[in-house]
Amino acid sequence: MVDIKSMYKPEVISFMEEMGEKKFRATQLFEWMHKKRAASFDDMTNLSLSLRETLKEKATLDTLEKVQVLESKTDGTRKYLFKASDGALIESVMMRYSYGVSLCVSSQVGCAMGCSFCASTVNGLDRNLTAGEILEQVYGVERDSGERVSHVVVMGMGEPFANYENLIRFLRLITDPEAGGLGARNITVSTCGIVPGILRFAEEKIPVTLALSLHASDQAERERIMPVARKYPLPEVLSACDEYFNKTGRRVTYEYALIDGVNDTDEDARRMGELLGGKNCHVNLIPVNPVDGKEYRPGNASRFKNKLENYRINATIRRALGGDIDGACGQLRNRNSGRD
Ligand code: SAH
Image (cartoon, rainbow, N blue to C red):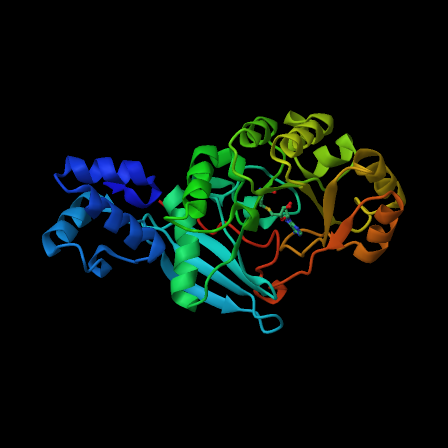
């Protein structure tokens, strides 16, 4: 079976030409999949019945099945639980802001990175998502809600740079005016700091915002909460982010989950000043969200923000949305342990 929703338009054209179809049929198919967000080949009514049948035999749309939708009573945030064709379960979180609808998508089923404060990694990595499955989170939520997703953050389950090729495919398709149609400026990709990924990403010429999960301003402290830091030390990570800014002109966001007594002391703020003070960047503070089985408590974000401002660091506090439905940062979990 061909994974047709992950294909670029020229690839869809070759695939259709190999089946003896005209190029304009490929264009119609591409439009149905992307522009019209069609859920099935049967919906593609201007394709002949026989072509639709052939497509069903040869290609899969990787449409995700909606298993559950939870809506926050406090802020209207919705958490979607989707099932992929192999049974893998993933989550996406839809947030309503004054500027539009933002969707937090997962890039992997589970995660191998092992950050100590995050639920997504508790059961390890199951598999990568295809580009079509990442796209389908956007399209599926739009079909279900009847609302248009205007912003995408790749901050759900998984480490996007550990699924690099599929991430790039997803980004090229979602920003293609003939496909997803979203502006690159409305997209953020968040990484735990995989240096070769950041450097390669800087060359792709996809002007999205890069967010780095910093979470500590000291190498030893970062290693304690983020095992990936052992492989990619802080100075290398920060210089890769500078490179991203230099190559793309896009200001990098540094995410910092405040954990009481762990990374929220005055000394932490002072070291942040040394690392980031005066840099053209932005720090996003997130009071750590509770995760089952972890004893971390949230740190005081407004106090830390004031400290950072003394060091000429531009900081904002991220509003925790969807906390009552375990839809907040770090609360999406891999439920697939034991799946065959
Ligand atoms: N793997 C990527 C993207 C997924 S996590 C990354 O590490 O950036 C999205 C953001 O939520 C990251 O900054 C992550 O560190 C943060 N996060 C994880 N667990 C959290 C928690 N319990 N509370 C607050 N933020 C958390």
